[in-house]
Amino acid sequence: MSFCSSGSRIVLGWNVDVVDLNVVAITDQVVHTFIRFKADKKELFCSFVYAHNRYTHRRPLLDNLGLHKQLVCNRPWCVLGDFNSALNLEDKIEGSSVIDIAMQEFKECVDANELVDINRSGLQFTWTQKPRGLDGTLRKIDRIMANLGFLDSFAGAHAIFQPYRVSDHSPAIIHIPTTCKFKLRPFKFSNILVQNSRFKQQVQECWGTSVSGFHMCKVVSKLKALKKPFQRMLFREGNIHENVTKLRHELDVVQRALDLDPFNVDLREEEACYLNAFNEAILKEESPRINSTCNRPTGTVATNTIEPDPISLSSHELAN
Image (cartoon, rainbow, N blue to C red; front, side, top):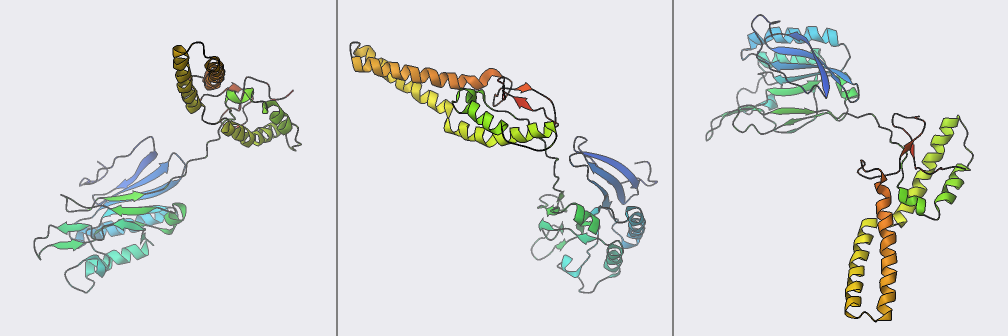
């Protein structure tokens, strides 16, 4: 903070994994920054304000905001903090009903820099002198404002003014929605589908369709066409784990009954049927576990990479 002769009363912190922040300029009442979001590469100017109590001492701040406006031009710009002055008459519940010099100068600065309050929720009055009985003061002197460039680039941004609790100021939060780039997912399917009687036929049908374009484009299109049929086939298999649990219980019941009546032919046949069904269910349950590192294991043998993630196929050939 040595850039400012009289020091700065503003402390900034940021998450380096989320944003890159560069300090553009510092005075004792404002810190101008340039912020770049890593998720979607969007950028904005952001000015953090802590204005002086006396309006005559705030005039350098107002002049400085005007100079910074020339640097920003029409690019996204957000100005937020404690301005130590109401902007409108409805921003206070006591005092004169006439706009004073401090409010007038503040309003002229806001208008000249083409700033407006962004959509907000929470408390209306952001500063209090702890009221006792009928005494006390409530005012809105903390604001989050932005220019048109910000409102266009960050649609949906809004301010939240929270209860002040033990402080005399309401904590202010600006929520800026960020849109992460869509991460393309690889083509995968559960190995259990290979045992389905419809598997090979379904692959042949999709692979036999006529698709125009480059060779890799044709491959991608045919793989995408397989997704929904594979999902329907997997859905028809039902909940594999629940089926195993159910058959295990039923097999236990039959085997206990057979232990009490070992010469019962009907129980022997029933036990054989349940044992066969249980073994088949166990095989289906264990089939996806080939890749033990995945939360939802699938057969994955990488082929040519045509997207940020590799296209993955089963260990079985999809085409003749």
